[in-house]
Length: 250
Length: 250
DNA sequence: GCCATTGTTCGCTTATGCCGAACAAAATTC
DNA sequence: GAATTTTGTTCGGCATAAGCGAACAATGGC
View 1 (tube, rainbow over the protein chains, first blue to last red):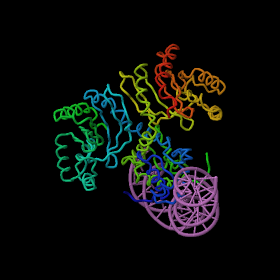
View 2 (tube, rainbow over the protein chains, first blue to last red):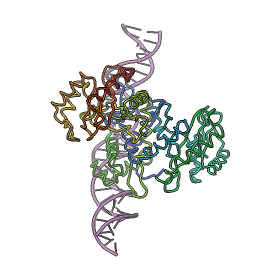
View 3 (cartoon, each protein chain N blue to C red):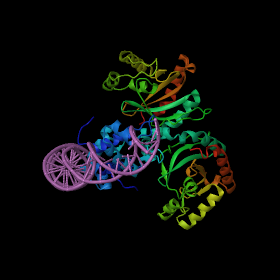
View 4 (cartoon, rainbow over the protein chains, first blue to last red):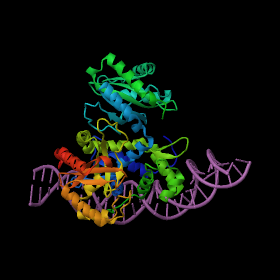
């Protein structure tokens, strides 16, 4: 990362915030002190400051802390600013209805997939929120679709970092993954064959910004049994055609 | 707010973040310095720290700063944690389809409405993202539905603060508003008659947590011409009945 | 090309953030 | 129900680093 003068206090404070995850959304002072390596009292002042501003809330019963709802407003501002999600949504819905599978929009952020929205086929009731979720590049359809079109430097950075294994199907060998990326580039779409979640297959197509670089990707995903070789090709074609008006727009 | 030891550095940093709004999503160092009252160099170190952590991004062309996508992950964690949105969504969809109007879910946060989700009738393509948006209590259906059931202290706090006028229909007189709140409590639903946006009417029903206090509200809203007195009553009844299984659950 | 405005860097000083230990308040144990 | 452990909270002191101000660099407009 870039150097330049930094605020240590702020870095510590954000490190505290980052301790909260979906799996571990409530934390106590002692726990946070252990996780961050800070002193309990330091963590306490940080939490106090955040709490007084609404960014952290303290459960009255357990005394534990959790993220405050005020943080949600930042997402709103970001979404309003870029408009990426809003522009894509009608197309996501089209794709979901046509394929009768769940359709995801993810963007590239910090060499990870950042999910922006999901669209469900008309029949299915939408279930859980996905916006803001993160996933690795190397084992998701969206991720591989984007990874294939990154610069050599970025690609190398991802491939040389440890590739976490999620299922028996996760490709953790950089050489094999590199081969697949070549294939993805020539096909124009990526397939995730239960590499992130067992039983789930996924077809993804990259989206390019007006600078020519990948900025996002759109996928459909569902039970592997519904995703035959033939279906995968059909889905890929459909996504490609549907997204045509959005290519090179952002 | 509570006192206790606070971190001035952190407060300043968050004040910088809060300068970014939906209307003003890109800001320069000088502008931020003016808005916060801090020195340019101080703002710069703050921005630098945020940028290195991914919470702020700098546009390469204009050199201006904007909120970083990494902030979106916090919303994801909050949504996953509470599950409020996910639990309500199927019911929102039901209501939207039955009324053929847009259906909103908002919660009470910091004496404001915090929008969590919107559901659109099947025919209509979903448009803009609403999650994380904020609105005042005194002039929205969702807001008034919740305001009516707050404690006297909280009610007083809202009514005694300046009630911003958005349209000719916005009620800015505390006495009149208080009367209306009494009515809302006896009816069990609130009506927003173009008080926030001209031409838009809205019917909202409060949702109570298992502690007995209001935690959220659900509304349908649409062009005023479609919202006759009769329709308003029908919509209110429908929302009430649909939400029954969710009352006193959270 | 000049001037105005912007973003960035660099010392200096003093405020303040961090630590450590003590205190208070629960939760857990026996 | 008392003792003990674990938790959240408060307080004083010291070294740090946050914030200031001015100077510098890099734009952009006139």
